[in-house]
Length: 91
Image (tube, rainbow, N blue to C red):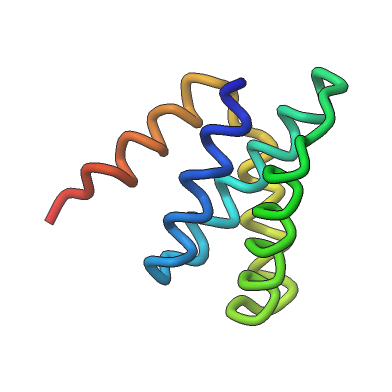
């Protein structure tokens, strides 16, 4: 599922201290799970919880809510473009 892959990438971005991007990708993933009615597997839920804890520590509540909302609004193509850009940043 694309949402799970994007969320894994979000965790990678969080660990690289790219917190806003991590929150954006998390928002897309949340919307993806909700729209399909899919449930997270145990490992996915565990990673999701760790990422949320990290983002809540590093971003203020308004920044976090804004980035998640922005991510929720992405379509699949936009999310993939964000993921590609995250993996291949322009210097």
